[in-house]
Image (cartoon, rainbow, N blue to C red; front, top):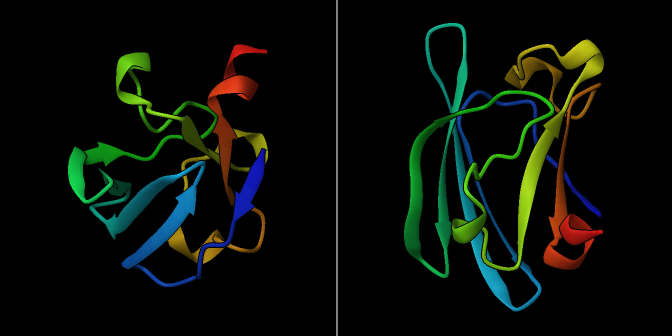
Length: 100
């Protein structure tokens, strides 16, 4: 598993290359909830996906490519940008780690 740093800002975009795949995540604030757009190798994979703690960001295995992301929070609270980098963490697991 690999931790990916998030900034404590309300709307952000990050691009990271993991296992030969280029991922872009656009994290946005909604009304009392966070959303994410996920692009894999510059192609939209998911748009407007709700961020929920402890569950895969990409809900379907056939869409995962080489891995998947999770937001980890204390007590599985809903992710919120003010807690990013404090007690909320974005993590990535490879396909091999998901199978184990």
